[in-house]
Length: 147
Image 1 (spheres, rainbow, N blue to C red):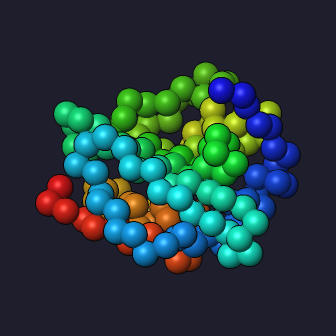
Image 2 (image 1 turned 90 degrees about the horizontal axis):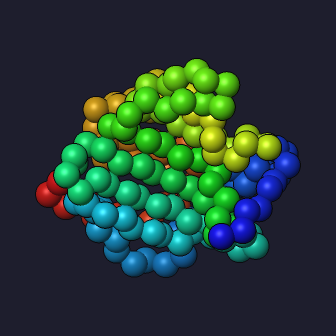
């Protein structure tokens, strides 16, 4: 798959751009596996994707990801995972967040900010906080399910 490199200002603008659900479809919060949900900008000029991934065995391990232009990861939240090693060698424990960085894409991680993510032991609340962090102002309808 080819790679698209964005300038930091382009990436920041895409992250801050208001994002909406594309329709009223109901999505199931995955008990395992991945759900890929399309989103669109308020002006309908940019397409985005919200990925929700849950591990098959460890139900408290997963990833929430917001992509633009099909393949550019803008923001990714990893939880229940091993520590992440940044390009400079520093380790970041889980949960951690990856925010697009020019020249590195999503290779850098940082600890999550408790001001943005209120309950790091509640994966449902982390999804709500993640959508808010990514400026998904009209979120998709996601049914929580049993897990």
